Image (cartoon, rainbow, N blue to C red; front, side):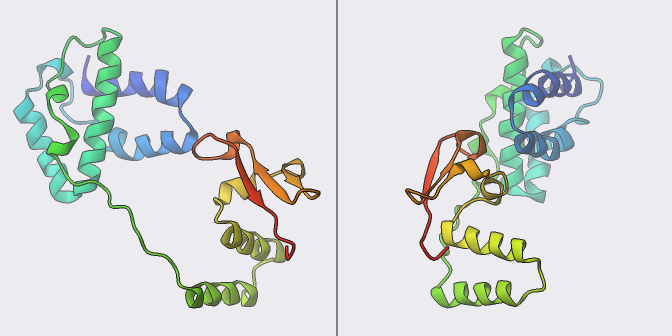
Length: 185
């Protein structure tokens, strides 16, 4: 089985059937785009560690964080195929993600009240529709994700107890989130 065949099989039988659309899009734009045509028509088991390292080194020169992400996703795909005995072995499994690139850094910047006020005023002054203005202001007040609010239904808003309950189906981490509804809203 070639790398392309392995990636296609993994994507069709695992990624597209199990993972969320946004995760599918992420895999499509990284590992599928970058590795699908690597080593064309060669069995994945015939590719040496050095050949993988050379390929990943080139990727690392272009974008260190993406190189690590691509390696991690590629290892997942190869491992998935190995567990199903589609591939006996693959040298990529002896390469660790920490051997390449760098971790994506988590930002720690927080907007000041002055910056938040500027954004709030810009929203109010914009020519956007009232519903879009309110949407963005609510996102600022709650710190919610756009999809959580966009997918919200009336039943999620308890106006007696002033609580908005985001169901697990709409939250990124797959858990229920309860947010207060402010009287000013």
